[in-house]
Image (cartoon, rainbow, N blue to C red; front, side, top):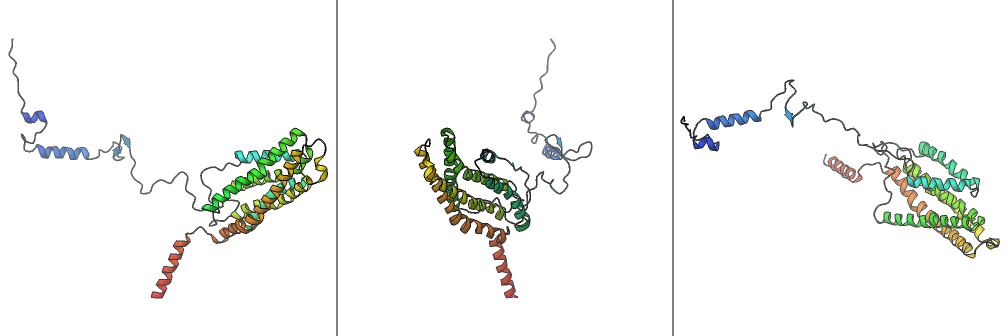
Length: 308
Protein backbone atom coordinates (compact mmCIF):
# COMPACT_ATOMS: atom_id res chain seq x y z
CA UNK A 1 0.00 0.00 0.00
CA UNK A 2 1.28 3.48 -0.68
CA UNK A 3 2.47 5.27 2.39
CA UNK A 4 0.55 8.37 3.52
CA UNK A 5 2.41 11.27 4.92
CA UNK A 6 0.83 13.22 7.76
CA UNK A 7 1.66 16.83 8.22
CA UNK A 8 1.29 18.35 11.64
CA UNK A 9 0.15 21.92 11.72
CA UNK A 10 1.87 24.27 14.08
CA UNK A 11 -0.01 24.97 17.32
CA UNK A 12 -0.48 28.60 16.48
CA UNK A 13 -2.59 27.82 13.42
CA UNK A 14 -4.90 25.46 15.40
CA UNK A 15 -5.81 28.07 17.91
CA UNK A 16 -6.26 30.79 15.34
CA UNK A 17 -3.62 32.96 16.97
CA UNK A 18 -1.11 33.74 14.21
CA UNK A 19 0.49 36.63 15.97
CA UNK A 20 3.19 34.40 17.39
CA UNK A 21 4.20 32.74 14.13
CA UNK A 22 3.88 35.74 11.85
CA UNK A 23 5.09 39.12 13.02
CA UNK A 24 2.86 41.05 10.61
CA UNK A 25 -0.35 39.11 11.38
CA UNK A 26 -1.55 41.58 14.06
CA UNK A 27 -1.40 44.44 11.60
CA UNK A 28 -3.17 42.33 9.00
CA UNK A 29 -5.91 41.44 11.47
CA UNK A 30 -6.49 45.05 12.49
CA UNK A 31 -6.51 46.08 8.83
CA UNK A 32 -9.03 43.37 8.10
CA UNK A 33 -11.24 44.50 11.01
CA UNK A 34 -11.19 48.10 9.84
CA UNK A 35 -12.12 47.02 6.34
CA UNK A 36 -15.13 45.04 7.61
CA UNK A 37 -16.37 47.93 9.80
CA UNK A 38 -16.33 50.27 6.82
CA UNK A 39 -19.83 50.51 5.26
CA UNK A 40 -20.10 48.98 1.85
CA UNK A 41 -21.77 51.26 -0.69
CA UNK A 42 -24.66 49.91 -2.69
CA UNK A 43 -24.54 49.57 -6.44
CA UNK A 44 -26.80 52.58 -6.86
CA UNK A 45 -24.72 54.77 -4.59
CA UNK A 46 -27.54 55.12 -2.04
CA UNK A 47 -25.44 54.86 1.05
CA UNK A 48 -24.80 52.53 3.99
CA UNK A 49 -27.24 49.82 4.85
CA UNK A 50 -28.55 48.66 8.21
CA UNK A 51 -30.24 45.34 8.76
CA UNK A 52 -30.18 44.39 5.08
CA UNK A 53 -32.34 47.33 3.92
CA UNK A 54 -31.61 50.47 1.97
CA UNK A 55 -31.32 53.62 4.10
CA UNK A 56 -31.92 56.99 2.51
CA UNK A 57 -29.55 59.81 3.32
CA UNK A 58 -30.65 62.17 6.07
CA UNK A 59 -32.51 65.26 4.88
CA UNK A 60 -31.65 67.26 7.99
CA UNK A 61 -35.25 67.52 9.26
CA UNK A 62 -37.42 64.70 10.67
CA UNK A 63 -40.58 63.94 8.71
CA UNK A 64 -43.67 65.77 9.94
CA UNK A 65 -46.09 63.73 12.09
CA UNK A 66 -49.20 62.38 10.47
CA UNK A 67 -51.43 63.99 13.13
CA UNK A 68 -49.95 67.26 14.47
CA UNK A 69 -50.56 68.09 18.08
CA UNK A 70 -52.96 71.03 18.47
CA UNK A 71 -51.24 74.16 19.72
CA UNK A 72 -54.37 75.84 21.03
CA UNK A 73 -57.61 74.71 22.64
CA UNK A 74 -59.48 75.64 19.46
CA UNK A 75 -57.36 73.41 17.21
CA UNK A 76 -59.15 70.21 16.30
CA UNK A 77 -57.27 67.10 17.49
CA UNK A 78 -56.82 64.10 15.25
CA UNK A 79 -59.14 61.84 17.20
CA UNK A 80 -62.84 61.88 16.48
CA UNK A 81 -65.59 63.28 18.62
CA UNK A 82 -68.62 61.05 18.58
CA UNK A 83 -71.75 63.14 18.39
CA UNK A 84 -74.13 60.60 19.91
CA UNK A 85 -72.79 58.57 22.82
CA UNK A 86 -74.74 55.93 24.71
CA UNK A 87 -75.68 58.45 27.38
CA UNK A 88 -76.93 60.95 24.83
CA UNK A 89 -78.92 58.34 22.94
CA UNK A 90 -80.63 57.23 26.15
CA UNK A 91 -81.56 60.77 27.16
CA UNK A 92 -82.66 61.63 23.62
CA UNK A 93 -84.86 58.54 23.53
CA UNK A 94 -86.40 59.34 26.91
CA UNK A 95 -87.10 62.94 25.87
CA UNK A 96 -88.65 61.79 22.58
CA UNK A 97 -90.90 59.24 24.30
CA UNK A 98 -92.11 61.79 26.83
CA UNK A 99 -92.65 64.41 24.13
CA UNK A 100 -94.75 62.08 21.97
CA UNK A 101 -96.77 60.78 24.92
CA UNK A 102 -98.81 64.04 25.02
CA UNK A 103 -97.98 64.45 28.71
CA UNK A 104 -95.44 67.24 28.18
CA UNK A 105 -96.78 70.74 27.41
CA UNK A 106 -95.80 72.31 24.11
CA UNK A 107 -94.15 75.17 25.96
CA UNK A 108 -91.54 72.81 27.44
CA UNK A 109 -90.85 71.20 24.05
CA UNK A 110 -90.53 74.62 22.42
CA UNK A 111 -88.09 75.72 25.13
CA UNK A 112 -85.83 72.71 24.50
CA UNK A 113 -85.91 73.16 20.72
CA UNK A 114 -85.42 76.94 20.63
CA UNK A 115 -82.57 76.77 23.11
CA UNK A 116 -80.26 75.18 20.51
CA UNK A 117 -80.23 78.16 18.07
CA UNK A 118 -79.94 80.50 21.04
CA UNK A 119 -76.78 78.69 22.14
CA UNK A 120 -75.40 79.05 18.62
CA UNK A 121 -76.04 82.79 18.79
CA UNK A 122 -74.25 83.00 22.14
CA UNK A 123 -71.31 81.04 20.78
CA UNK A 124 -71.09 83.30 17.71
CA UNK A 125 -71.76 86.76 19.13
CA UNK A 126 -71.34 86.90 22.90
CA UNK A 127 -68.81 84.21 23.85
CA UNK A 128 -66.92 82.94 20.78
CA UNK A 129 -64.23 80.33 21.21
CA UNK A 130 -61.21 82.08 19.73
CA UNK A 131 -57.54 80.97 19.75
CA UNK A 132 -56.00 81.65 23.12
CA UNK A 133 -59.19 81.02 25.08
CA UNK A 134 -59.12 78.27 27.73
CA UNK A 135 -60.08 74.74 26.85
CA UNK A 136 -63.81 74.36 27.61
CA UNK A 137 -63.43 70.62 28.18
CA UNK A 138 -60.98 71.14 31.07
CA UNK A 139 -62.49 70.71 34.54
CA UNK A 140 -63.56 73.92 36.24
CA UNK A 141 -63.04 72.64 39.77
CA UNK A 142 -60.01 70.64 40.92
CA UNK A 143 -59.10 68.70 44.03
CA UNK A 144 -61.73 68.00 46.71
CA UNK A 145 -64.22 70.31 45.00
CA UNK A 146 -64.22 68.01 42.00
CA UNK A 147 -65.08 65.03 44.21
CA UNK A 148 -67.94 66.98 45.79
CA UNK A 149 -69.18 67.88 42.32
CA UNK A 150 -69.14 64.20 41.31
CA UNK A 151 -71.15 63.27 44.43
CA UNK A 152 -73.56 66.10 43.66
CA UNK A 153 -74.01 64.78 40.12
CA UNK A 154 -74.79 61.27 41.40
CA UNK A 155 -77.34 62.68 43.83
CA UNK A 156 -78.95 64.69 41.05
CA UNK A 157 -79.20 61.59 38.87
CA UNK A 158 -80.95 59.64 41.64
CA UNK A 159 -83.36 62.38 42.68
CA UNK A 160 -84.06 63.90 39.28
CA UNK A 161 -83.83 60.96 36.85
CA UNK A 162 -83.86 57.47 38.38
CA UNK A 163 -86.64 57.85 40.95
CA UNK A 164 -88.98 59.91 38.69
CA UNK A 165 -88.46 57.33 35.91
CA UNK A 166 -89.51 54.53 38.29
CA UNK A 167 -92.46 56.66 39.40
CA UNK A 168 -93.60 57.14 35.79
CA UNK A 169 -93.17 53.45 34.92
CA UNK A 170 -95.16 52.45 37.98
CA UNK A 171 -97.84 54.92 36.93
CA UNK A 172 -98.07 53.26 33.53
CA UNK A 173 -98.57 49.91 35.24
CA UNK A 174 -101.21 51.15 37.67
CA UNK A 175 -102.96 53.52 35.29
CA UNK A 176 -102.20 56.73 37.23
CA UNK A 177 -102.31 59.17 34.32
CA UNK A 178 -102.56 62.20 36.60
CA UNK A 179 -99.29 61.42 38.36
CA UNK A 180 -97.56 60.72 35.03
CA UNK A 181 -98.72 64.03 33.57
CA UNK A 182 -97.46 65.87 36.65
CA UNK A 183 -93.97 64.29 36.65
CA UNK A 184 -93.37 64.11 32.88
CA UNK A 185 -92.41 67.79 32.26
CA UNK A 186 -89.67 67.67 34.87
CA UNK A 187 -88.27 64.39 33.52
CA UNK A 188 -88.41 65.73 29.96
CA UNK A 189 -86.48 68.88 30.84
CA UNK A 190 -83.79 66.91 32.66
CA UNK A 191 -83.36 64.52 29.72
CA UNK A 192 -83.15 67.43 27.29
CA UNK A 193 -80.58 69.14 29.52
CA UNK A 194 -78.29 66.09 29.57
CA UNK A 195 -78.57 65.75 25.80
CA UNK A 196 -77.82 69.43 25.22
CA UNK A 197 -74.82 69.36 27.56
CA UNK A 198 -73.40 66.42 25.65
CA UNK A 199 -74.04 68.19 22.36
CA UNK A 200 -72.09 71.28 23.42
CA UNK A 201 -69.30 69.11 24.84
CA UNK A 202 -68.89 67.35 21.49
CA UNK A 203 -67.80 70.62 19.82
CA UNK A 204 -65.20 72.28 22.10
CA UNK A 205 -63.96 74.46 19.23
CA UNK A 206 -67.51 75.83 18.75
CA UNK A 207 -68.98 76.26 22.24
CA UNK A 208 -66.92 78.12 24.81
CA UNK A 209 -66.99 77.59 28.57
CA UNK A 210 -69.61 80.31 29.35
CA UNK A 211 -71.95 78.85 26.73
CA UNK A 212 -71.60 75.40 28.23
CA UNK A 213 -72.19 76.82 31.71
CA UNK A 214 -75.34 78.57 30.51
CA UNK A 215 -77.00 75.24 29.62
CA UNK A 216 -77.51 73.91 33.19
CA UNK A 217 -78.36 77.40 34.45
CA UNK A 218 -81.17 77.96 31.94
CA UNK A 219 -82.53 74.44 32.27
CA UNK A 220 -82.46 74.64 36.07
CA UNK A 221 -84.45 77.86 36.02
CA UNK A 222 -87.03 76.32 33.71
CA UNK A 223 -87.15 73.11 35.72
CA UNK A 224 -87.89 75.03 38.90
CA UNK A 225 -91.23 76.08 37.41
CA UNK A 226 -91.93 72.51 36.28
CA UNK A 227 -91.12 71.13 39.75
CA UNK A 228 -93.32 73.79 41.35
CA UNK A 229 -96.23 72.81 39.10
CA UNK A 230 -95.60 69.14 39.87
CA UNK A 231 -95.72 69.85 43.61
CA UNK A 232 -98.92 71.92 43.23
CA UNK A 233 -100.70 69.10 41.39
CA UNK A 234 -99.56 66.51 43.92
CA UNK A 235 -100.85 68.62 46.82
CA UNK A 236 -104.38 68.93 45.46
CA UNK A 237 -107.13 67.21 47.42
CA UNK A 238 -108.57 65.42 44.38
CA UNK A 239 -105.18 63.79 43.75
CA UNK A 240 -105.97 60.83 46.00
CA UNK A 241 -109.15 59.75 44.21
CA UNK A 242 -110.50 56.24 43.68
CA UNK A 243 -108.23 53.88 41.79
CA UNK A 244 -105.02 55.61 42.93
CA UNK A 245 -102.96 53.88 45.60
CA UNK A 246 -102.07 55.93 48.61
CA UNK A 247 -98.41 54.98 48.24
CA UNK A 248 -98.34 56.71 44.86
CA UNK A 249 -99.78 59.88 46.32
CA UNK A 250 -97.15 59.91 49.07
CA UNK A 251 -94.33 58.99 46.67
CA UNK A 252 -95.38 61.73 44.22
CA UNK A 253 -95.43 64.40 46.91
CA UNK A 254 -92.06 63.33 48.32
CA UNK A 255 -90.46 63.26 44.88
CA UNK A 256 -91.88 66.64 43.89
CA UNK A 257 -90.73 68.24 47.14
CA UNK A 258 -87.28 66.59 46.92
CA UNK A 259 -86.74 67.81 43.35
CA UNK A 260 -87.95 71.28 44.23
CA UNK A 261 -85.48 71.50 47.13
CA UNK A 262 -82.55 69.81 45.38
CA UNK A 263 -82.65 71.76 42.13
CA UNK A 264 -83.39 74.98 43.94
CA UNK A 265 -80.25 74.50 46.04
CA UNK A 266 -78.36 73.51 42.90
CA UNK A 267 -79.37 76.75 41.17
CA UNK A 268 -79.07 79.28 44.00
CA UNK A 269 -76.24 77.70 46.02
CA UNK A 270 -73.96 76.31 43.31
CA UNK A 271 -74.61 77.36 39.71
CA UNK A 272 -75.23 81.08 40.17
CA UNK A 273 -72.72 81.92 42.97
CA UNK A 274 -69.88 79.53 42.06
CA UNK A 275 -70.05 77.73 38.71
CA UNK A 276 -71.10 80.54 36.38
CA UNK A 277 -68.69 83.17 37.85
CA UNK A 278 -65.81 80.68 37.70
CA UNK A 279 -66.58 79.92 34.06
CA UNK A 280 -66.68 83.63 33.18
CA UNK A 281 -63.45 84.29 35.08
CA UNK A 282 -61.65 81.54 33.21
CA UNK A 283 -62.99 82.76 29.88
CA UNK A 284 -61.95 86.39 30.34
CA UNK A 285 -58.85 86.09 32.53
CA UNK A 286 -57.22 82.76 31.72
CA UNK A 287 -55.41 83.05 28.37
CA UNK A 288 -53.65 79.68 28.54
CA UNK A 289 -50.26 81.18 29.54
CA UNK A 290 -48.36 80.06 32.60
CA UNK A 291 -49.00 82.96 34.93
CA UNK A 292 -46.25 81.93 37.35
CA UNK A 293 -43.61 82.07 34.67
CA UNK A 294 -44.99 85.31 33.33
CA UNK A 295 -44.95 86.85 36.80
CA UNK A 296 -41.32 85.87 37.29
CA UNK A 297 -40.53 87.24 33.84
CA UNK A 298 -42.17 90.57 34.66
CA UNK A 299 -40.28 90.71 37.94
CA UNK A 300 -36.98 90.11 36.15
CA UNK A 301 -37.81 92.87 33.67
CA UNK A 302 -38.57 95.27 36.54
CA UNK A 303 -35.24 94.42 38.18
CA UNK A 304 -33.42 95.05 34.92
CA UNK A 305 -35.11 98.44 34.58
CA UNK A 306 -34.14 99.35 38.12
CA UNK A 307 -30.52 98.34 37.54
CA UNK A 308 -30.38 100.35 34.33
